[in-house]
Length: 292
Image (cartoon, one colour):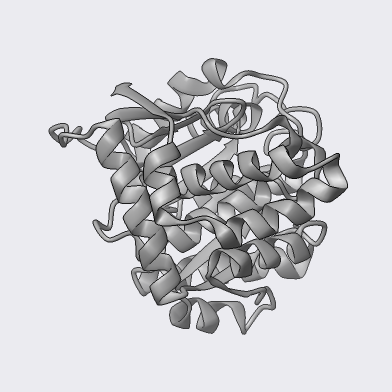
């Protein structure tokens, strides 16, 4: 397992600076069109690919052993989502994570339902030890991953299936501890998202409950985080995770204002991701933050 890292001095940050960085990151993503390798679950693959395309990134669902590793070396970034971890995809995930690390590519781990089921729990522990740049999950998943990584005797189930049964506030301390332990950024998704690097805790206040009413609402965010990690101008994984969350949840908020239900919301979200401008991001981001 990763060992604890020494705390670095706090870098001066503010909500206004993070909002400006998010706007710049969106412009950079559109200019660069990063190639995102998404090893993700079969339920959300189509929606995730469409979300990346709408935002301006280029998705590639390369999850076959003997291809996943070489492709990770060519891609801009990598997402590994454990939603449906079949045998071949598990092998591909390990292969891709190793290659991403060897090539210095950012990668995101989404430990879906960790703790609830043995196969994905074992895989999550193995992947976390390989040093992801960002870990994104709901509150229950982050609590379960923290218990797994710290060797607690009883690992709680990561929610009810893919749904959280804990609050973001419940998981804040575990997220900060994970971030400090491994030098990663941990993003806890919920009504108010919490993103921490172990030094700062940033809260994102945009979003809509409709994200929980469609398949892939959270999973696509992990892929978006990978895209931003590949193109964030200041190369900060904290800034990348915040920028991804702000852009995604702002688009979701705008889509919800036009939607009449979950079906129209899913379509409107893709349109809103495509229409979102850097100016809107800087103007409308609603962030608060404090030292962790």
